[in-house]
Image (cartoon, rainbow, N blue to C red; front, side):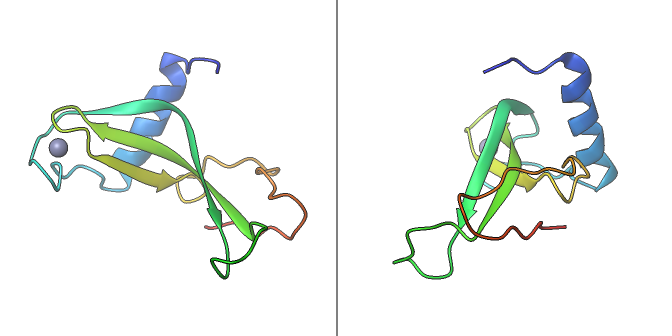
Length: 97
Ligand SMILES: [Zn+2]
């Protein structure tokens, strides 16, 4: 995986701050966080038996520096998705805004 540039990291952190993401950790009340390099992609299905993913939600991950609690923020909401978000294999795509 290509490491994120400082510029990219600062842009993501700025977008989180603009949206009021500034509370302490809900688990340990710590106030130090770090952005994890890379994207977490959640594959959504309608039923657990489904073998194909209906929709994918690409997200960025923030980790609490004290306890490691992870939080995920959908990239679409942060305005970070390009016109061609990752497609689930086969089925149609619905972008989460
Ligand atoms: Zn914590």
